[in-house]
Structures are given as structure tokens and as C-alpha cells.
Length: 309
Picture 1 (cartoon, rainbow, N blue to C red):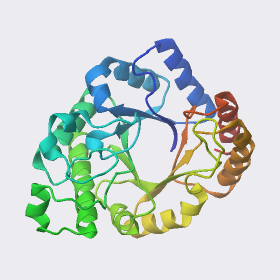
Picture 2: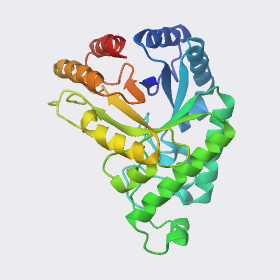
Picture 3: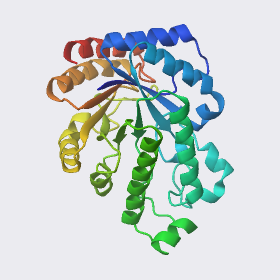
């Protein structure tokens, strides 16, 4: 599966014929699926906009995967924002000091809410799959009353990671019960091997892997630098973890945040990647955000995908 990864795409300023042109272009590039992010904000303000996107993408023959973003602060995706539900339910906040508030995965009210959120999402829209984008703070020790009731007064980092794995497996089972046949992709951060080795085997996961970049990045005019690991560096680990868990491989190429001077190295490195690696599910950002020359980056993606994929 080759997925055009999009975040916060067409949710507020909605021009249907522009969206349709995008989906037609994705097909022409060689993509057979599109990933559309959907946050708590979209559930409030952009229900019709999301329906328009899903219907137009399916009309063009694309599979539609949803990226549930920032739910309870526990998943990535865009936009970068705190959880609306947690603001309204502070009793479910994990009492620690992460960079954004996150829900305590052991809190029954949060589990019930996120299952209800996903039920609505999977019932109201014709979706083919889910991509869970990087669970956050999986090793963060906190002492929410529900956490202490389960693990005792001094939970460990391993307790927290075990709880996160049980949470994602339970959520997957719920989603598959709502919509049998759903494809579920889960990718993780590389710095928690205890978590990733076990998370790859979580019930319901079909594809497992990592994201990574292929060029230096900068947010605006600062000197570009290597921010995240190279995606190739995670291939052997991806293969091993998926083989041990009986899952298929996934990789997301981060072609974003590029200044013009980094575009040639992205082209060379992306071509080398496509020549040497074949994830079962490969995702590439479609018009990735905050590139200095978006058309140049997209032209490289289009040309190389048509050549190799």
C-alpha cells in the first residue's frame, strides 16, 4: 500500500474542486490510499468537510485511512494542540509534567470517551483503515488514582508501557468490532524498545513501523540540521519486530520542513531509499508542510514514485 499522508487538509477553507484535483493528482503519482487527519476539533467543526474529503477520495478510487490526531493528547498528527476533552475533564489528566497534558490511559472515563469517538468516526464515514501516529508519553510515570489502583503507589516505566500496549490493543479490538476488515497501521517512536517490541504484537495491528526523514530540516530561517533519525536506519529493526510479531512493515517518509538547500539531498536520498527498501505499507507526505519550495519537493515525490513504485 502506498499512502499520501496529509495533515489538517481542507478542514476549514473547503474548496471541493481543489480537493478533487488533489486526489486525482495523488492517483496520478501512484498513490492508492490517502491518510486524512481527524482531531477533536474536526469532530466539532469539520464534520461535513471531512465527509466531502472522504467521498471525493473514494470517487477517485483511493482507499481512505484516518489519522486520529491528538486524542486525549496521546497521539500525534496535526494540528499541534491540547486535548479539548481533557480541558473539560481535568480529572482524567495524568498528573505529571509532559509538554502537553495527556490522559491517564487507566481512567475509565477516558477509555469510554475515546471508544465513543472512534465509534462515531468509523460509523459516520466510509473509511478503510486507521493510522495510529506515535503514541505519546508511553513511559511517563504518573500517579493518577486509577493508575495507582491498578499498579500500586509506585508504578514503573514498564508498567506505563504495558498499560499503553494494552490500551492500544483494546482500542483496536473495539474499532474492528465496529468495522470488521479495517486495516490498522501503528507507528512508534524509536526510543522505547521495550514498548515497540511489544506494541508490534498488539492485537489488531496489521502494519507496524516508524517514521524518519531523508534531509536536513529547519522551521524558518535558521541553519538546517538533521532533526530526526534517517528512515533507513530503522529498517532492520522494523523487519525484526514485525517478523517476531507476525505483522507487515510500515514506513513514513518525512519530506517536510525543508529549506531549498536541502531539496537536492532529499531527492538523492529518497531515490536511494526507493531503490533499496520495500515496506509493505509506505507513506509519504503529500505537499508536506512548511517546505520552502513545496512544488520542487512534490515534483521529486511525483517523479520518483512514478519511476519506482
